[in-house]
Image (cartoon, one colour):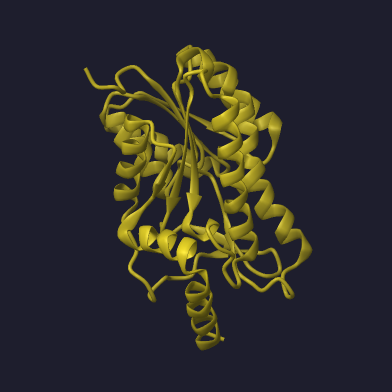
Length: 266
């Protein structure tokens, strides 16, 4: 029997991209899925595609930056499926703009979604994860290893997840709950993916033609590997592992490369 058979997985931000791909991969292995996103239409489309594939799933719309929505997400999941085995904090949003030019509200909006949007579901789900000795996963980023120019708030929010995961790992020691943080690299964007511009307006995610991106299905498989092996920390892709090594042992080289790259694009 699969490790996922009859297990219940909540995946935030699962109407598209990595979250949706992960939902399908876990469902293929027998898990019952709880989809979550802010956009009801996209969420309904994701649920329909899962049901058409014969998977057992429900959708709970809500904003992870609001504690009441997160409590509703957890309560509904337990009401329908009776338990929670996996919580993957995947929901997030990016931005683009220098610290000087960014509207002050952008800082708050990004931190609310990317950081508090992981704190709130986690806080609501922990009593249930303790019962099942389940897994708690945070979708971090290679951008959370070093502050990136024009992505300062995004980098800050992802760095904060490292501290959160480290704290929880110690607090939950001996409880049987697995904590993991995935340092995800550049991933192929869904056409509907959006970010904040410097004024706080929602715009389409710019294309990343300057670097090789990884399919979301590959990222989903790596996260599943972390859950199965109960890994705490994993750097995705060879570039990510090189980045981690260089940041640790040769930070001055990384800074020099970032400076040259930034100046060449401005």
